Image (cartoon, rainbow, N blue to C red; front, side, top):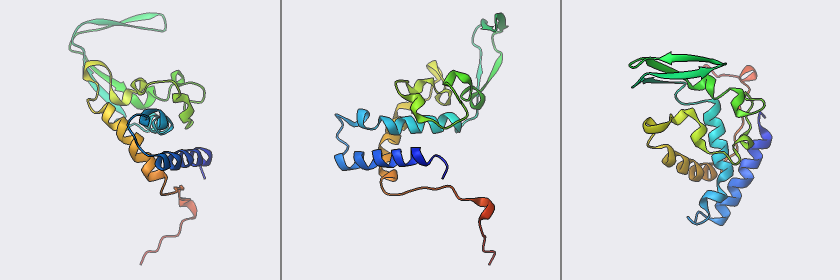
Length: 155
């Protein structure tokens, strides 16, 4: 199956986490691999592919050696899906690779927006993923269905 190595690594980590328990003292260090998987899934398939904002003041953006003036009250449209698949995320940005998050913070994800307008639930969703994924992965194995060879009963 697709990403079989990551699936087995995640399942192994999940079983280990569940066997040792969820005491708060070691939760963040024990569940780092789950956070990396969650971040990588959000990076490749953000729940919100675009974000919109309005410029509160005039400002300049430097891009490829040129400066562009963005006027106050301009509506800005951020392409989260495209931005999170850029080479800024390392080699092979279109491939699923949770190891790219080792040592990085999820704040690099545009999924949650940035600054004063960032998602107030970012940290809560991160903590939920660290608890929920081990519970789910320790009990179940997942595989993608081969839809081209799938038989559907029309009855």
